[in-house]
Image 1 (cartoon, rainbow, N blue to C red):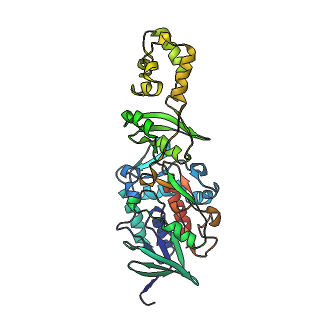
Image 2 (tube, one colour):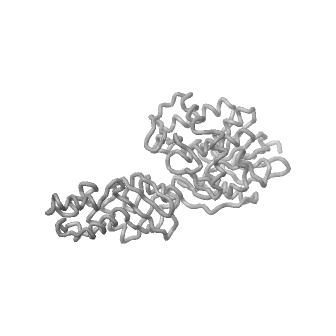
Image 3 (cartoon, rainbow, N blue to C red):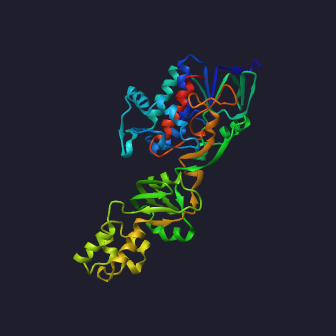
Length: 395
């Protein structure tokens, strides 16, 4: 096999987790080759956070992640923390700022984060080879063999950092899940996460006039709720609050939306009735909400009713409609616009300390391909950094 390239570590995927793993393995003087079918490394990093890369969060805990094994992520997150990555960012003097809920973004461009990772890879002697389509992966004895569209590679350690199925236009494929199954791993069913919700045709048509309107809301389903901005779109609902709840929503379920989370709406209307009895319900509500919302949710008849004609009981109905709006989405926009993939390689079959397979020695799974999915706000990048770092200590 003279035409086969021999190395110590093969990493499939020049992703956030893959590059981090490569850096750490290279620091240990391991010969590392990263293979990716794309023409450039870190493509998803570059488009993240609107091009500014929400690279981590000031507050990170296992509570910010979804997994069939909710304890699995704790080890990696504690061994390489958000503060460790922030220190790396500061070392490179990358200007950044904090937004709501502890989110950290680059001041300039996501390119700063990618350039930092690539500089670290270069210093660690990492060999990144792009435009290599993976054809087959096998293992014989202690060595893995990876056949690509441009050559064959062998290594004693194989790391799958292939990401999930979100944003297929960026090159997402099910390769990581397929390889996991090939080696006997269980895969939890995958679905789109952090994704806009779509509405049934009648509601979609009704609310389409609100497209582009954003409202500070509390959105809930089951035992989970998030307070952030909600955005009306031509297809349904989006914005941070909706993206967050989408990871917990299941088809057929109802979501509950409070459009006025800081207001005692009944008392507000009672007070207005005594001070502005001739005002219409929709008119006074437009002090609190975009004026097109009340007629659509309450109906034109109620919105046009004068306050003096309303009973306290009807005020209660208005408050219920606006502060516990019940809505049953039609579905999601799917992987096309999803930021992450829920489900993936079963954590119970991996080491939480090293990310190594419990079934095949020398095989590792890191990042989004694993059944660990973070909230919106830099948590998925932190999982990539932490899981990649852990695997990089041992591969």
